[in-house]
Image 1 (cartoon, rainbow, N blue to C red):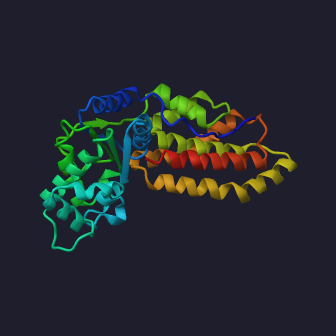
Image 2: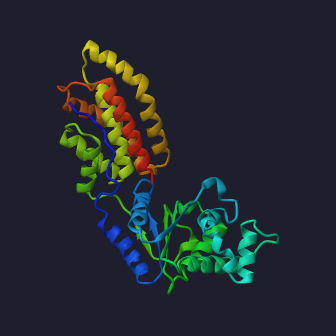
Image 3: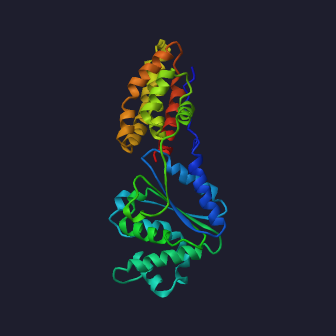
Length: 321
């Protein structure tokens, strides 16, 4: 029996979402700026879409940042992550804007900067950088941006007209600062794609009832599908009858692979919303059914399962957003 767990494709289908992102890139190449907020529950694939658009912008300069939950109380922290690589253009900004942004980033002395001037400074800075070639700014986990950064970036996003600058945000639930910006909701995968994802992660024969149950309970959430697939693959291997040699292999598996899968599952479950958590809790029941469907097959060796567990860990980690 082959129970090899392999990393899933970065994107399955998502044609409407990719078309919207491609449209934004097309506008940038034509000299027109714009912004887009990609929103959806945890695990829906927002980060994968950001990776897609960044990869499709090979002819552009790409600047990245991500909200950090522990830095939400630090004014301009996320803005600094985005703009730090661009600060070689700081001296080209008009004096008041240059001073305001310099103070915000701790490069100059002064009182709290006027946020309007900081917003203008960021807009001017992005426009300066885009004079050489289009600039794409990608901001993940925007729900964790500090308030000052969110205000400034949203201010700039609303004023991207004739400059080839694009801002793409990804957030579970965008803050009020982003209200009015174009948005793109990312929902669960269609049933056909969810089944294809499941099949790409678990490469043994699953009973159709078990497959349908997993797809239904995860509501097409890619992370939940991957998490349950990992659990099914692991538990099926442990539930199948084994020879004495296979029992020794299973013991070795538990010593080497179990911690890998357990840690990955805990990390993934911690980031899921309630519906996906409920789906993850059904892993054991689904795995029992799956084991019954493949009970005549033989278990994998310890070496194979260890590799599967590591691949499963990578799969869960890659799809956490």
